Image 1 (spheres, one colour):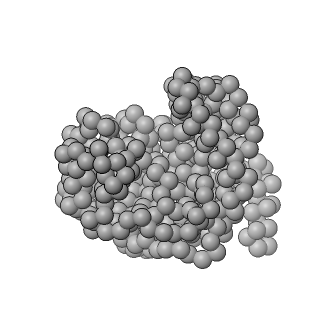
Image 2 (cartoon, rainbow, N blue to C red):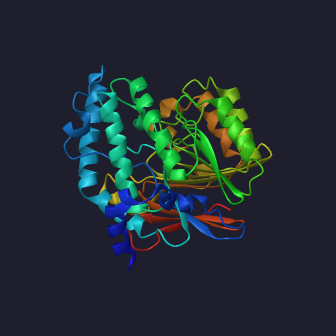
Image 3 (tube, rainbow, N blue to C red):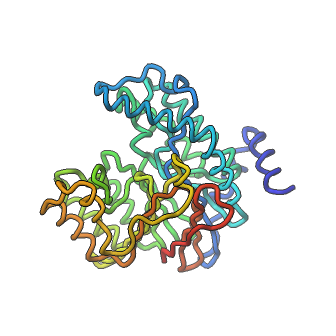
Length: 378
């Protein structure tokens, strides 16, 4: 039976598998020198072609914002009726005998629902789709994104997310997790999942401290941990905000990440971005991933910026009014430690490979049959 037949029969029969059968790969940690891989999708914004399926009754008090969201419904419906199906099919072919997990980097769904039950149904439909297409027999794990918590009442949607996702991820992983911040180990390596929305800083610090002695500490979080080079969203990173009112807390978090020599896997910005940084006595390497194939051109890799000096320049070119002392200082604070940096407006699928002390990510733009680019993380 070849892999396509296996996927077909596994998807049809997944409900009949025993819990132990489905969790076995999560418990097979392997030895320290064993090579393993993780297949990754970035943001997906899963949605239906018919906006009434998940968005019936959705409203926003700001008419301009609601109009923007409804344009996103149309974008998503078009993507998932066409290009994104091909992207997921390509990603499924990256799963092989050494693949232990399949990850998704948050914004699993578009969100923007009217009630608790619809939001849970939206999440379950997306999880079941990606599980059947990519990860039958493997743990399929996602991290909380802002869209995953968004609707007429964000508090209701956040509750629906936690009520559905905590037990679902516990089942996928084969261990009980108590919240949307959690950690698990794979041999000598640690994976720390962080809910970046209203972050529970003490809980995150506790998890990172527990992971500090791991060979590789992978931090999976929807948002970047470095300021993003865009005029609208440069402040939207872990513990960042427009006024930088959490500066002390963000620097403490950065120092803790550096003490773990963290490898950050994230999404949110709908770009493929690589940033390797040294400072605070350690190293942080960030790989930002996107599977939002909204435009045909995003199926190819074309860099918008490359190198330390290019970091934090695009936002000032696009909006010179942002070139304030405070904003320049923010990017300079991070720029001085950059060892390597690149950013491209490209979407696709990704394969993280861990081979002893070596770690790299292979990127496949769009539905490309060949590797587009390799990013060496360690």
